[in-house]
Image (tube, rainbow, N blue to C red; front, side, top):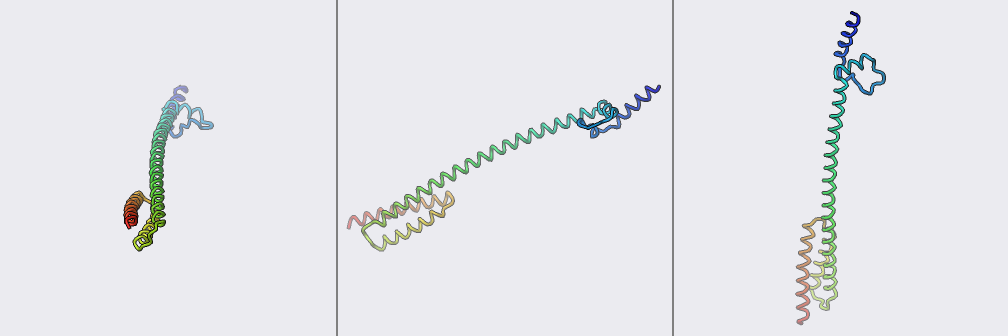
Length: 160
């Protein structure tokens, strides 16, 4: 009879143990606690919770890696665009400097030439402050217009 009472008390003890009390890494759990956790499924539940946490962490890690890859790709694209814009700007500034130099070295010293030189110098100043693709495009257009005007001045100068 004592065996049955002991067995019944062990079974009841197993029912009273919560899954939170079933720590797989506990220092010194009692025999009753171990038996209770084993019979009530507390250990299995703890293992299942930890496996779920690991899977969730792996999913989160995969998402974070994808976000990082996307961010690096956007950064690379932005860097390439910036490099392209800087190249365009340097080319425009070089073209402008050549046009200005050509105009300044001209033999005719008239009012229209002086005005064109001032406009080109202002355009040169603007080109140094350009910071966007639209500003660079506008400067390129102004340089093209200025080159046409300078060519027309040279043409007029050679006809005289």
